[in-house]
Every structure is written in C-alpha cells, then in structure tokens.
Image (cartoon, helix red, strand yellow):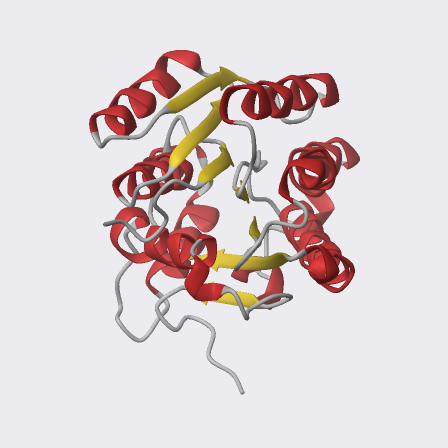
Length: 259
C-alpha cells in the first residue's frame, strides 16, 4: 500500500530532472498523475515509467508561461480524473548564472513568468477541483530555493522569482486553510541531469560556484532527486502532512541550518 494511494497529482516539468523523479516516486506510492513539459518525447518516457509502476497517467505538452496552455492542462486533468488532490509546482526556466550587472530585465521576465506567474495561475485554476476535500484535504507544494533564501551570487532573477513564490505561498496558505487546502514550499538540493549537463555552458567562475553549492552541506555530497528529494514531496502530498501548512521545508542535507 502506497503513501498516496488513489490521489490525483498534477505536477509540472516532468520530462527530466526533479520533476521526472518525483513523478516516478509518486507513481510508485500509488498516485495517478497529470504530468506536463514542453518536450513530449522525453515526457512520454516519464509516462511509460510511471505507467509501469501502476499509475494512470495523463501527459501533455504544456508551456507553463502560456496561460491558455495551463487552462487546457487543468481542464484535461479534471475531465480525466474528476478531481485534483495535489498540485506540485515544480517547473521553472532558469537563466544562465551571471553577476547582477550582467543580467537583463528579459532574464527576470523569463524566471518570473515560468515560476511565480505560472504557480499563481495554476493554484487558481486548480482551486475549484481541490477545495473542501474531506479528511486531510488537498495539498499544494510550490518549489522554492535555498539559493534565494541565502541570496546566492549570480542568481538575481532566480532569487527574486523564488522568494516571490515563498511570499505568495504563505498568503495562500492562510487564506485557503478554510477550504482544507494546505500550501507549503520546498527548497531542494538534488543534482539532476539538467544541472550537471548545464555546467559546461557556464563560465569557470560560475561552474565552480554551482558545483560547490551542491555539496555545501554536512554530508558533503549532492542530493539524489529520487532518493533524497522526492520522498519529501510525497510526504507533503500525503495525509501525514495534514497539519502542516504555510511552511518552507529544506530537503537539502542541512545546507541551511537555523533556529
């Protein structure tokens, strides 16, 4: 018996990286899934793995920066499954890390639209399908970042977008508790193929900075998206987290430790 048996989970950005591994883990824990990404070929691979784990899966090509695309995705999910129990806002388009003076307003636009704007839209679109669920209710997990909490160099647009996500999530958590919906943010540390593959495109300074960030924790290793991060998302999706809302969870191996 899985931790989220029978729950319908809508999760974005599942063709690769954290999103793919979370989708797989959730399928193994009994969820049915609505997954999306821009690259349909890679998304279909995630779909295949999840179906082999026993999940019913809706997979759609979606540009999360396009509102009409988000509407179509949520509508298709509701039509297919009849409800949405969990929303995981995972997808985010990150621009190349550079000093603030080298960043442009276009960089900020991309990161805001693919993060806080998309999360804003999806929460509102999913709300009618999540509200007033009996028992432990529904759950929203919005991905934030330790890089934003700490104000990491080279990540100005990313930090701005991810801190906006945290602020928005706290407000929605306060307002939607009355509808039995909990809202939390998750700051992960997991070395994905996207992160490792993207290192070659960075300057030597930026590459060293990123590599150090992934192992800057008491365990002195990078986290595994499947083994270290995805179980935390499963917990937040499960009924075991029924009394947790408005919180920011660090699944980062202790990279950030405070009172």
